[in-house]
Amino acid sequence: MGAKIPADSDLVFEVELLDFTSAKPKQAKKEEEPAKPKDAGIPTKVLVDISNEEAGVGDFPEKGDKISVHYTGTLLTNGSKFDSSLDRKQPFEFKVGTGQVIKCWDEGFLQLKKGHKAKLTCPATSAYGKKAMGAIPANSDLVFEVELLDFTSKTPKKVPEVESGVTTTKGGVDLSTVNMEEFQVIKNPDTVGEGELPKANDKMKVHYTGIFADGSVFDSSVNRGQPFDFTLGTGSVIKCWD
Image 1 (spheres, one colour):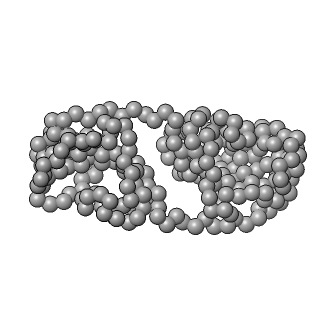
Image 2: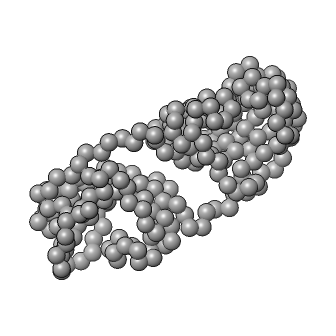
Image 3: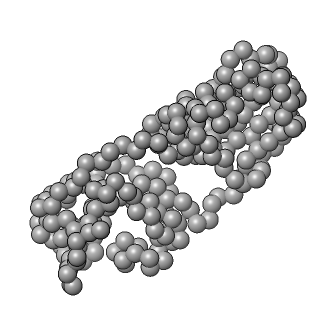
C-alpha cells in the first residue's frame, strides 16, 4: 500500500475517471414487434449495419475480450421476435470470438466499438444451422438489433509508473501554483469527458496518484496497475473525492 500520511497533510490527487455504473440504470424501452421485412432476400454472409457510427468510443474489442451487450432477435422471414435482453432488462455478457455464441455474433461484435448500435443479419449457416432452438426453426436466417454497451480487454494496456519528486503532474498541473488553502479541481485540458456526470451512489472506477505538496508520491493505483472502485457520495472515501 502507500506511504504513511502525516497528520494535517495537504494532498494533491492526480485522478482519471475510468468508468462508472449508475445506481439507478435507465429503464430500457420495450421494443415493438418489428414489421415484416419486405423482399429481405436470403443472406449469404454476415451483414453488419451500424446505425450510429459517430457514437463509437475507443478501440474495437479483440478475441477473448469480455463484452456486455443488449440485443433483440427476430426471424428474417417474418420479423417475429424470439428473444430480447431489453425485455429482461438484463445485458448479456460473453467472451467474443471464442465460440461461446453463434458465429454471426463472434464476427459482428468484433466490428463494433463501445456505444455502437447495429443490425446483424445472420444467415442460418452463421447462426444455428439445421438445429431448431426453441422458437427458432431449423435453417432460419436471423436478424439481431444490438448495442455494444461495454467490454473488458483480456490484456489491459500497461500504464507507466509514476515517480516521486514531481514538480508538474502528469495532467500538467504545476504544484508550485496550487493553493493548498482551498479545495480545487483542475481538469486536464488535453482530455475529453464522455456522457453524463456521475451522481451520488454511482459505483466509480478510477485511477489516481496521491502527491504531497512537496511533490513526493505517497500512493498510486497506476503503479499497482489496479483501478480503485468506490461508491460516490457515501462517505466511503475522503470528502475531497466525494
